Image 1 (cartoon, rainbow, N blue to C red):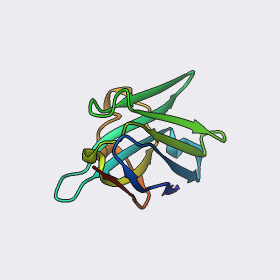
Image 2: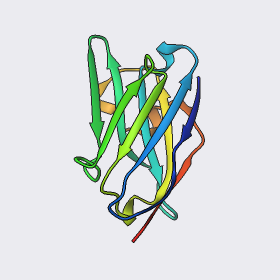
Image 3: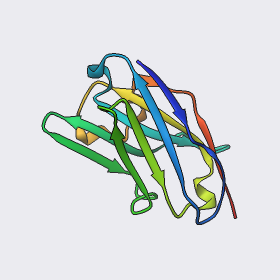
Image 4: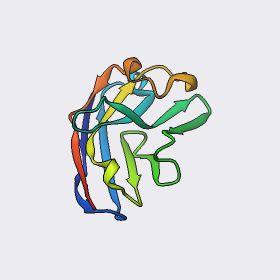
Length: 127
């Protein structure tokens, strides 16, 4: 599985950005796609995830981004988007997308469970 994250940039507080994660490789190895971020001097943290759980599409968000960020997919799950609205300076970080095969909706936020990681894309929010 290969993942390519893109769409980062510089934006003013209150603005919006859409990140894209383009995925390739066997679909069963990427039943769940997650977005994580790492700010300077901080640990990597969960942002959002989407999981194709048999007949249901499950999404999950960190409390800090609920109501502002939306995760979605397109192109038969080959592209996953992270629409980020009402950006705050605290959202400044390198954003990574990651993939795993399991569909367990109880552990979508656990970074250690993700097997495949893309390179990051930098989001800078100026206040």
